[in-house]
Image (cartoon, rainbow, N blue to C red; front, top):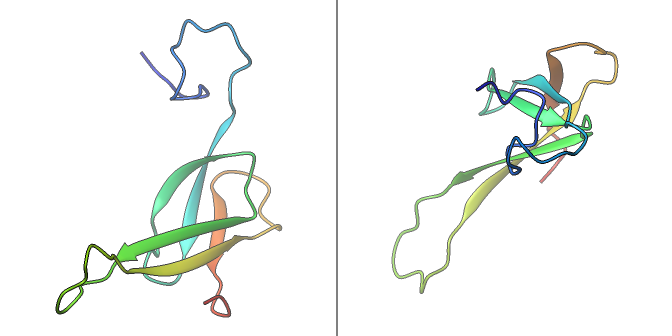
Length: 88
């Protein structure tokens, strides 16, 4: 069964409005070229990568955070998100 256009968290027989999925691609940064599906055209996408810790961490985890912003000039698929170099 093809789930395109449906909410993957719902059973396909649920009688609700279908969610519109769109393809998006990330430009620049560590996730350059990564493709994904998004709903509602979010203005920002956050990508995280785990960091390797040295020494005892006591259960703590560290991740590197990268922020990508949607290019509002792109109206059709694939939507484009560029790395935000000013974000932490």
